[in-house]
Amino acid sequence: MADLPSKAVLRRTPLHGAAQAAGGRMVPFAGWEMALQFAGLVAEHRAVRQDCGLFDISHMGVISLRGDAVKDALQALVPSDLHRIGPGEACYTVLLNEQGGVRDDLIVYDRGWTSSAVNGSSAANNSQSANNSHELLLVINAACAEADTAWIRSQLEAKEITVAERKGDGVLLALQGPQAASRLEALAGVSLANLPRFGHLELRLAGGANGAAAAAQVFVARTGYTGEDGFELLLEREAGIALWQQLVAEGVAPCGLGARDSLRLEAAMHLYGHELDAGTTPLEAGLGWLVHLEMPKPFIGRQVLERQSAEGPSRRLVGLKLRGRAIARHGYAVLVDGQPVGVITSGSWSPSLEEAIALAYVPAGLARLGTELAVEIRGKAEPAVVVKRPFYRR
Image (cartoon, rainbow, N blue to C red):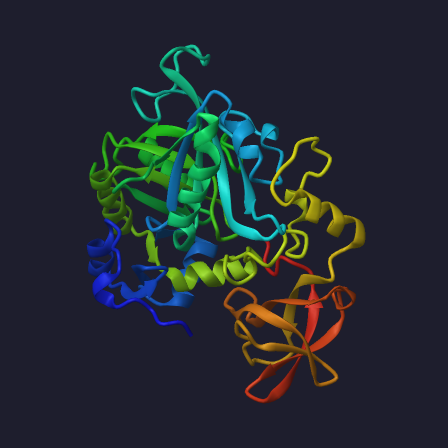
């Protein structure tokens, strides 16, 4: 394991103190000191599956891109057709390198034509004017945020695109679970029934029962990383702290990195550095639906992906269920007849299914559903079988 930075140099989100006050067990993560758990991983996991949970994700990067042709400029860096989304919509995609490998995965939010005078406000006539520009928001992984921002700036600023940090010292929250919508509706005083998955808008919170977060302006996106309905909320520092404290006081379970990881694994969502990295293409990772080769536009890595699409990837990401209770961890070998043929990228015990589950890369010929494999765990070959992903679906 690589050396982790000392605790003294770790960054802290605006919610660090509030997380500690709520009982958070703090650990180093991607250069930040973050809560691993509060009441416990299983309790937090089940709260999100059955009710509602609240995550501090303020360590994530949020970048604003502005310019008259901002979507065309960003299109050169991603394999997904960005013109398939319009204002108020978003898409999941990946940044690629010249070899077709993944630099990072991210969400692109189309904010439409927005005023440059007041960040985030909508143009009155939704058309271009001297003070307006088309804005995209990108939410990127914490570990890649600085490198992503510098690279995107190097690629786009020559095309007259303004690249700026959007979050500043603000707060980014994830409110996730079957009761997330009703919780947020009570705070905002409006129905969110017509806000679709990956839709986004700005709301002014009404404050809820005790009014702690009253009058806060918040960017709301119906996105998340748990496999449940839910929202990601971007707002200013003080309003974000007040909203966290209010929701926790009203009974929403504070949740840490442990539950976030077990939830995303059940939903078979990729984690950068595990399922995705600079040496892995989206086709190998089962993200072919992000690669729009029918789009007649160039993008970095396109030729590699065209060739791999025609020939088929030599390896594929698969879901595994282990026959027993042994847990497959990142880096464990996948075996056939006692010989290593692949590697586990993520593995855990599933609180929802009460089974051991894992994601792994194996040769394409072994990726068929029902294929019997094994995982080397503490010197023993533990039987496993290739299963359909996601493991859990709400």
